[in-house]
Length: 212
Image (cartoon, rainbow, N blue to C red; front, side, top):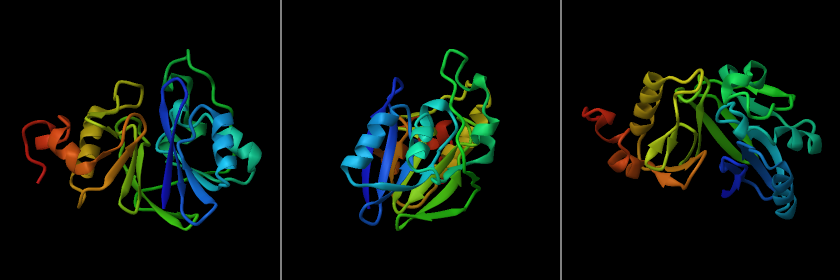
């Protein structure tokens, strides 16, 4: 498995191209910057087989229409609570651009396994930043979207956000076995063991109560 990170758009959103078998990939969170994304796919000889969305905020989905213009049958996987048809302008404020509608949206749910490009992504529901936020686990890598960052977490003050839900989701991640790599929606990569030790929202349960 090879993972290419592209940092795109005004919010410096991380988009990931995950190559399994040679020339075949999954795209996670195709953010603003469709032209660059298409160039990267072309220059690397990659054909996307699926788009996985960690959540529905516009800065993580803006390039989906660009991908579907190039590959019209490309499926897009999103939790029903965040699927584009459920999005409204309040998601990140009316000053932000409207997302062009896209097709072939497939709902996902807890525990579902998505197999494309010789890879299998398992869905972990991690609401809090949005009602439909999810984490994708591929092998020993977690794609956490805007749930867990390096020494930080996603905001919960947007419409639909929930701090109590976020804390339950963080607890769930903290209790996962091992020390998987974390590839977040913004900022640098990290590891779960590091976040357990140093992230104030994870260490000691975020409130003085041990996770174990």
